[in-house]
Every structure is written in C-alpha cells, then in structure tokens.
Image (cartoon, rainbow, N blue to C red; front, side):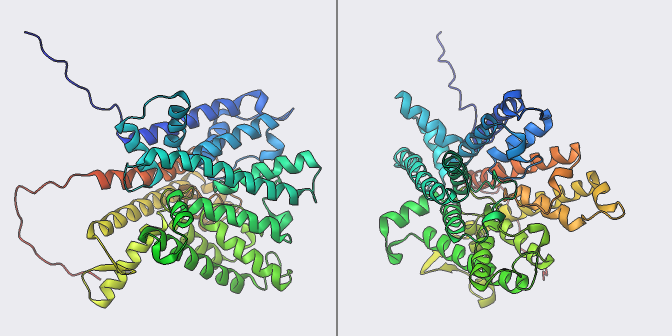
Length: 456
C-alpha cells in the first residue's frame, strides 16, 4: 500500500518569521561591526558592543554605547546605515525585493508575512504595495538627502555634505536617531531648513506606508480610510500638544530654549515634539530638559508611531482605540465610535493586551536595570537617578533612542538587557498584535454563569 507523504506546514508562522528574520539580521550586523575594517585606526569594539550597536541599528533605535563618527570607519558607518535601512523597510519587504529581482513566485505564506509586516488589511495587492513602498522609500530618502546635502554645503565640504545628507535622510525616515556629528542635531538648532526637513522625514516614516499611500491617492479628508484619519488626527494632536508643553516648560531654561529667539524657540519645540515620540534626534540636550518634559516624552514614546511605519511604541491607533473606549464608557454608551464608524469590540481587547504587555516589559526591564546598574544610581555624587534608568528602558523598548546619558555607562549585563529590550520592542508589539489577531475563537465547552465584580 502506498501512503501519501504528509504535508508539512510552514516552518514558521508570519510573526515567528519576522522575529527570526530580525534576529538573523542582527547577527550579521554584529559580525560586520566587529570586523577591524569597521573601526577607525586605533579604535576597537567588543563583541558585546558590536551586538548592541547592530541591535540598535536593525531595531531603528539609535541608542549607542560608543560615538558613531569617532569609533567607526566609513565602512562601519555604511554598515550601520544599511542595517538601519533594512530594519526600517522590514525583513518581509527585503525578502519580497529578492523574490522580485530573481523572478521567483511569491506564495501565499510570503504574502501573509508581507501583509503583517506592512500593516495591510488584506493580502490582495500586497506584492504591488511592497513594490510601491520600496520605490517610494528610495524617492523620499533621495529627495530628503538632496535637500539636506544642499543645506549641509554651508557647513561641510561638498563630498562630506552629500554623505551627511544621505546618512541623516535615511536615519530620519527610518526613525533611527543615529548621527555623524557626535552632538545629534544640536549644532543646527538655528537652522530651520535642516530641522524642518528632518522633522518631515521623521513624520512620514512614522505614519506608516499604507497611510501615506492613502493620502497620496485620495487627496481629500472625506475620502480617507478611518485608519488614515485616526493616524493623522492622533499624530497632529500629540505633536501640537507636545510642542506647547515643551515651549511652556523649557521657555526659560538657559540650557535648552531659554537663550533662543522666539522663532527658534517654536522651531526647536516643534522638532522636539516630533522626535521624542519616535526618532531620537535632539536639537536641544535631553539631559538638560525639565523632569516634567521627560515624563511627557516617556508618554509620547510609549504611544510611538503608527502601524506599518518605522516608529516603535504601542502605535497611535492602539492609543486611539483605548481613548475612544474611555470616551464611550464616560458617556455610558456600549459602542466605540470614531468619525462616523463603529469599531469592533475585539479591537479594544487587542489594544489593551498590547498596551499591558508593553507596560509590563518596560517595567520589568527598568526594574532589572535598576539592579544591574545600581552603581550608577546609588553612588555618591552620581548624576543619574532611577528616573534616568526608567527613561532608558522606555526608550529602548519603544525604539525611540533618546537617552539622558546613561547608555555609554551601562555595565555588560545592562548593555545586554537594553539590547534585548530593543529587540522585543521592535518585534514584540507587532508579533503580539498578529498573534492576537490570528487566534481563532473557540466556543467554550462550558458556559459559565456571569457575575459582576467591583472595579474602580
């Protein structure tokens, strides 16, 4: 009797494939950054530090244990840039590119993976969407690089200006936060062209490819999808509110906005409001900001970017669903409504689960860092506090990348912990969202009686 061979299922589910893909990319990046060719003469990098920097680049975070410009050679800087680009585009987008270039057929499993990676609602047209995303990314980054290069000519020789323009355009669009100046964008806090171009790239990268495509095609607000409307509305509200908060609380601070004229105060407050949510660049020193501003920054980075974008956090739409549910509860209504549409209840359950898991990881990472880095907090005369450590763990998980100066002083266990936290932040919310979305509803074998408990 001949038996048919049993068909094997896919080796990985889409969420698992994304997680493994990012891990492999980090491994390759670690090896490349550990090579002597990646370092400036007389400089070296431990394997742990190479792993940290590769993780930060692939997870588009920007936290750094060493100064990029003085530690890495041009080859090393290009490796970081390519890791940022690969991490920002996503493993599935790069895989799709390889399929397209080699002419191989893209199967259902690959299409499902691309759908989850891109934040698309359907697999229909996902290959075409991926092709569009790859092309649009190159075009946007090229335009940004050209604008920045032209402006950098006022500060650097032509070749360096072009290189700096390209590097910062890519890191800005991918919300990575790496820079080549050793001082982020603080040298350009008086330059509206550089700050506004960088802010524009950051916003476009963080809003998500599907939203940008919807805006490009539909043009008019009433024709936008609910997803696009929520992303644009939440992004605008958060950016505007954060700009006012930074202006109010940093107005008289001589180390941040205090010495700047009014137009530059507004410009730098706006740039700070944009970058503290997803990107990690700074035009005013984070370490000198008021504690209240740092608290607001932690809230903003926890919310993060939007689905399918290059930012981190729980995502703007997750925050919107929870906020709309709170509004419905206050009004005493059962339905969660937004802009003339009713949201399914299961979205709230997923939003709460994702937010709770993110908060749990950040709290756990912060607690462990307080243990591994107790020497930084408890030492007499040490400038760091427990709040700085918690800021670090939040920045790592949300892949935002700002630091109050703790990162270079982390111990070996602390560096490993922050690297793992960055990885979880890059793949965790996405993996959790997909896993929750794909769970099949199974009817309970027993219908238990309902009973209320008191809350609040």
